Structure formats: C-alpha cells, structure tokens
Length: 484
Image (cartoon, rainbow, N blue to C red):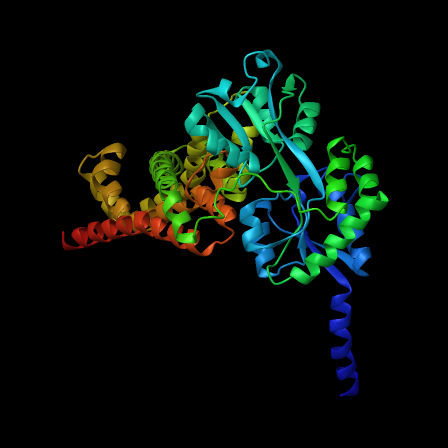
C-alpha cells in the first residue's frame, strides 16, 4: 500500500515536468518536420521555440501530432499545453482561445509562373483564375474576401507542397501563402516567381486552452525575454528567416506596448448560429458536389464491376487471372493512395482535372468491390436454371440477360445500396486532391469558428438527407420484387 501511495504521489509531479506541445509534422520545414538524417527526431523553428518555452518553465517538451486544421479544437480540448505550428493570429482565435503574443511577423505573398509575372501582379489581375492556398489560413480568408470582387476561384490544399508543384504544372494560376512557404515553394520549383508586393501581414502565435490564461502569461514573459536577449533571433537566423520586420515587432512587444492587432476578422463578431447561416450556402454547394461526384462514381463503379464480374465468370483463364489480380491490387491498397497516384503521381504523364481524378479514383476503387458482389450473385443462381436455359437453346449472353442477370441483380441490390452509402462518405477523401466537397467545407467552417459541434451536426444532417432516401428507395424495390 505504501508503494502504491508513493507511485500515485509521484505521477502528478512527473506529469507536470512535461510541456505537451501540439503541431503538425506534415507541414514540414521550417515549422515542424522529421529530421531527414534521423526520422525519429523533429526539427524546425517551432520545435526550437517549444524547447525554449519548456526550458523557461522548467519542463521537458513532448510533441503531440495533430492535423493542422484540428489544432484549435485540440487546444480547446486540452489535448496539449500549447499549439505551435505556424499558427496565425486572428481575432476569432483570441475570442475562443488563450493566444500568446506574436513571435514572428510574416507577409502574404503571391506566387505565379515566371512567364506570367508581368500580367499577374496582384489579386485583381487574376479575375476568373484559380488561386491555390491552404484552408483555414489568413491567405484563405483573403481569397474568400477578394473572390466576389475580383472573381477569383480559391483552390484549397491539405499541404504546402502541392500548391506550388501544381502551379508549375499549370493546374492553378497562382498561389497565395505566407512568404516563408512561398520562398521554399519557388526554391523547389524553378520557373516560379514571388511578386514583391505584400498582399497582407500576419503573425505566428501559440494557442492554449481558454482556461490556461495563467500559463499563457508565463509563456508571454518567456517569449519577451527571448526577444530581448536575442535567443529568438538566433533561432530564426538558424532557419534563415530573420528579416527587417522582426526587430520592429520585438521592440514594440518588449516595450510592453499593446499586442499587435491581428488581421481582418471573419467570424469573431458572429455568433455560432450566425456563422452557421453564413456558411450554409457554401455547405449546400459542397453537398451538391458530394452528391454528383458520388452518383457518377457509383455509375462508373457499377459498369466496371459488371465488366470485371462477367469476365471472371465467363472469361478464359488468362483473363480471369488478370482481372482477379486487378481486384486484389485495388482492394489491397488504400483509396487515399490511389487518389494521390492518379492526381499527383501521374501529373507528368496526364494531368487529370481534380473532379475527374476523384471520379475515376472512386469509380475504379468501388468497381473492384462491386465486381465481387456481382460475381458472388451470379454464382449464387442455381445451376439447374442455367442448364434449363441451355436446353431451351439460350446462348450464354441470353441466359445472362434473361435468367441469370435479373436474379443476380436482386441478390446484389442490398450490398450495392450499402456500397453507395459508403462511397458517399468516402468521397470526403477527395479533398486531398483539391475537390471541396461537404466534409472539407465543414472542416474549413469548423476551423474558422473553433468548434466542430454545430458544423458537425449540419454536415451529418446533410449526409443523412442524401443517404436515407437512397436506402428507402432500395427497400421499396426489394419489397416490390418480393411481391413479384
């Protein structure tokens, strides 16, 4: 009992020695990334800032991996003590979270192809053009705000690498992101050009749960001390990010002047329900994209499934073996990987539009599953009926169309319905190739208001509104066939 008591007493003390900090290692350098020389080790300026803060608090830093668009919600839940991953300051964040003082000032930069540098100097020059960015960022807010005025088409990505590679390939006409990412994007893709004019100014901050204001204040003191004694400057110089904007920012903050005002507000003045009403048209449009994409993909999947199943049942052994191998490959690899290969991997060979790549990816993937359903249904038809059809002089094609096919379809109807509902939900994966469907639009909505509750309920209601009528229709068809 004494040993148990000692262990229980020591556990909280040990827990207090850790500073859990959240970030997204997928964002890459210079924020947070796995060290190429040692993948088990993280590097980046936010990694070093977390170390600096932990030392000031007398703690040991421990990294918590969180997707970038989920950082605010995870901070509010208390999944970590502080979030540091190139998180941008905004009035909305300050309303719902405890936000540190800014530790870095950045400029939003427009990147275009060198051949277009003379004609695409500003957002106004890009009327009717596709401009890439990351969702739930200041750049995204600027694009959305400028969209109606300049006729821009925002294209959102999940990472900061593919916007620039797609710009080089001609899939988009420009990229708007902070200059930290823009400089890296141009360095990786020769032939791109960063326009010198600033589109906007923002600040990187740390975010904490709203009840952690006391810890936030201690962290602010640590950051101010690091600004004054040059430790933050050393970090940014090591990452080749120090510029003339930072000394002025640090001078204002270390002189205890008011914190820098964040950029234009997009949601802080709105209640959750007001924001929901504002986002409802965008969610409705995204739901239409989801429904159209899912319906077309299912039609393709049914066609592919019928061809494969027929080939495996009626084809010669070499064809059967090839089709079986195809089905196993498609079913044995993740749909997400297939989408990446179709859209990004084949870009140097064939540049499929995002919607078409999503349709083909979903259709081929579900076509493999459908083929197994149809093959099983075809083989479930009693052989006696097939022999009777041959006795009556039916060809294989006539037996399939008039005897075997209708019965197999009845057996396959329920699994087909389940697959369509599953496809409807799996369509959320296509956001990784820039298709803004319902789940992606909901994610942007949730990130902007800092809560998943209302956006999640609205999204779920829309999915149910799309899937329940389909299930009801399938049940009616089944009952009609049973009566027949």
